[in-house]
View 1 (cartoon, rainbow, N blue to C red):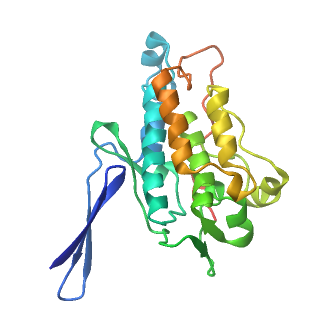
View 2 (cartoon, one colour; view 1 turned 60 degrees about the vertical axis):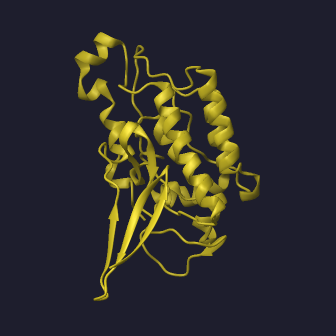
Length: 250
């Protein structure tokens, strides 16, 4: 066997084994807490453990700080990929794994490309609800389109695993996104966090923040220790909708 190790703290380390028989093997780090999407949804204690939720006046077992840490971990990992000129193209909570010490790590590089600009020329199932306008319209993918997807991922984190554009069809998204329609602000979300999402969803790709700029904003929020994501159980609290059938529809 020959082997190649790919490792970075906020990426799932991969050990690629090359066999003399021609077979290719891939070994990756085990993430004990599974993927971030399921992890967020399991934290919805009003659904999973109502007695605990009421007794502790909380809608989630996760705190605002923990949720922001997940967001910062992903931004840090994506900044590394951007520096290496890698485009992920499928950034979503389902493709983030939660490792030891609850560190969020980027995984599933099945659609990634090692170049500054990638134009898709073939048809196939696409993560439409996470895709930037230019990717939907022109099949163009860049780090800036990954930033758009990151904004949707940030929305997933804040909404505790809600489905983006729940109740809307992909055809409706093709029509409405170019008309400046965007995901609504979750009720438990601070204006500053939602503003960061909005920056990621700017129509012009070059006007979106870099992952480094996103990380600076998140680190500042973490240092301030303000409740940017309200997980307190309040009257008429409702979770963002979930539509599992819509999550990977093309």
